Length: 339
Image 1 (cartoon, helix red, strand yellow):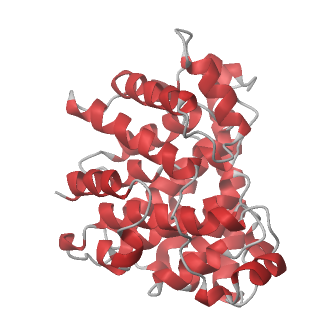
Image 2 (cartoon, rainbow, N blue to C red):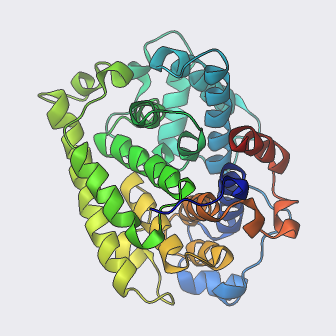
């Protein structure tokens, strides 16, 4: 791993890239590639829509980011200190009049249940591993000063508030880990193997302090058995990703190699694949991610988070960054963490 300069403003770059990908993929979600090409023209020339409107992906990323800022403003990040403000932000998002961007069903059900005094584990949808778990997790990878334990616990807890399936937890942990590794200067060529090693090391590690009795509510025999199921599914998709990154043509639909991204592990893998196909061409990576047959906004959202974490804020065209919805708040949060 080689260190890059902190001056790249990785947190700002990641948050802005995430929103740009989200806005670019918003009009193409639910469309197949021929339909996207007919509507948008050649994929390498796709332009940011006017206005550049984001979806629930960016909205929930901001909710998590605000919750983390509040939690860390009152002391060291810990489960109870994090859970309350993040929960409140998720409930605020649920009730917001702007929550009209085709939000995921699991998030809606869980956030409705979080609006009250019940333990959060009672709201968690333990059968769901939708990409809503990790489309929003990038801030956990961007916040400085966390230990590996805090970062893993926070990534899994924020996922579990809505998506309690073990694969949702593991995929969110891996997504935050990928963002952090890229901030720290990990080279794209070695990223998949670093993630596979991390998954193997954590395969049977259940973060009881952060997750409580979630494993019991999911009906698992032991906490280790519960979480291992999620890591095993992630290891399978990382194997596919490693092969795809070496062999897939950039002109083919990435979803054909690593999945359509509606579920958490596929969103991670396909978002990473688009980034790895064009590690030094962030706009091309975003356009490839937006021109896919699956959950295009979530795939492109993650691709933008990875590209911005590696390359920094300066890689995004000012004309795009200046008109992205919520751009001012994204920049403020990024600057806080870049400082």
